[in-house]
Length: 129
Image 1 (cartoon, rainbow, N blue to C red):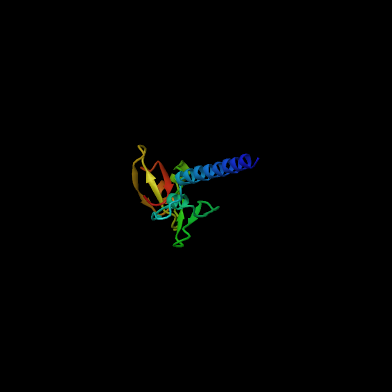
Image 2 (cartoon, helix red, strand yellow):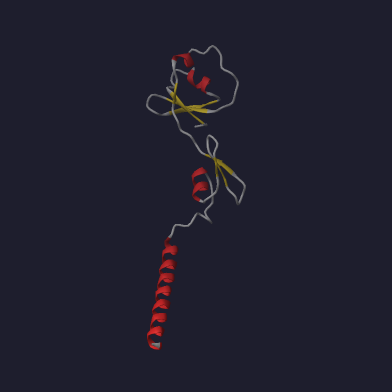
């Protein structure tokens, strides 16, 4: 009886050691967050596991440096005839990047009104070129 109990405990111990070894191996291959990489933009901030704020556009705060990175939204906004026929543009600085028919960047404008009064601009995206 004693020998069978000993063998049973040895089997259980070996089984637990096997599970522990497999767990350590699996955990060593799991992708770890970017801990040492320098965070330069929104995407790398998110990949490093930093919190993302639910604003629009979304913002990510680097917890180590306190820097905030804003997600770039590249939606295209097409200029329509009402935009092109504006008599005056307000002096609000919300930079946009104007594009021609072929998708080539023309230049940065201080806001969408100034971009669309240029007949060469077919659409714009928010942010400077």
